[in-house]
Image 1 (cartoon, rainbow, N blue to C red):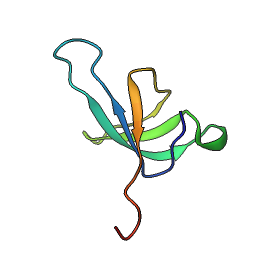
Image 2: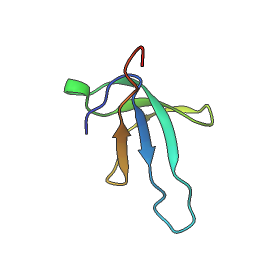
Image 3: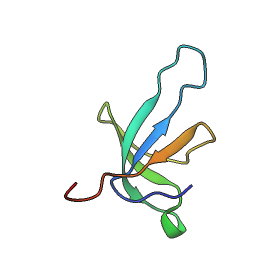
Image 4: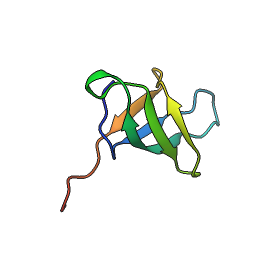
Length: 65
């Protein structure tokens, strides 16, 4: 999994009824944009994340568009 600063990390709920988590990738710490990612979650919390198979990246909107 690769990301860029400003992309969104989405982690789907792993159990029925558990909500998905969404956050902004603030920094990538692995080679070539790989994990771990410093993420600011929608609730304001920040942490380093090694995403699992239940996660995907949504690219940031292009600048000016």
